[in-house]
Length: 102
Image (cartoon, rainbow, N blue to C red):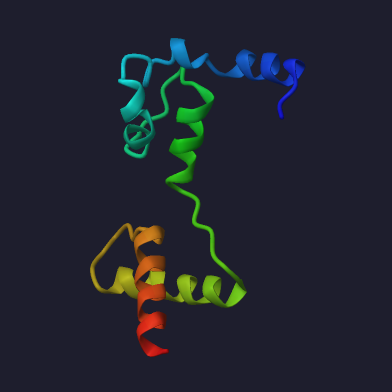
């Protein structure tokens, strides 16, 4: 649980959710899904929108073997003509291939 002091520290860097320039006008039920599509990081963004933005760049793997497979798949995907391979999609394809082999 976050303490009051930590929460106040966050508000020095980020806007409150009700003041966020990105999500303040979105319906409450749609906020989670709309945050997945954030592709810009404007000033005045809330903590949740900031986290959703950066999660689009970070890919979590199960172990080092899977990480090695992903790092090998990225240059292969570039050679196929994709200048900006998506790590999430490549990892999903690798896991599907691995599931069909076993």
